[in-house]
Image 1 (cartoon, helix red, strand yellow):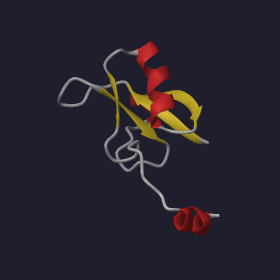
Image 2 (cartoon, helix red, strand yellow):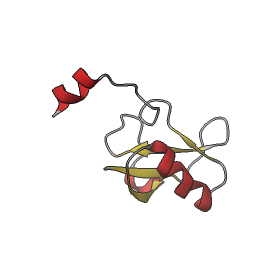
Image 3 (cartoon, helix red, strand yellow):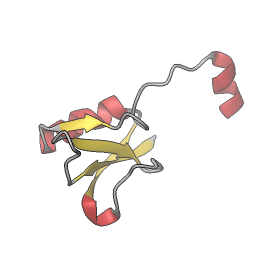
Image 4 (cartoon, one colour):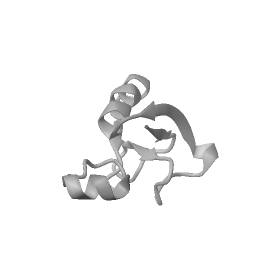
Length: 76
């Protein structure tokens, strides 16, 4: 599980980004709301859309990364 946050300030395009806890682009604590633990950015987005219909996933930390079996075993 990963922990996700929703920015309370919009980006330049008027959207509010979802970030994983360790994202290099995550806003300061006063400029974000905790969404909760989720398996991936898509699950976090479903929750965020109930809070703010202008929510989107961060392109840096919430995009689906294709992993090979070897890469998954290496992480373990």
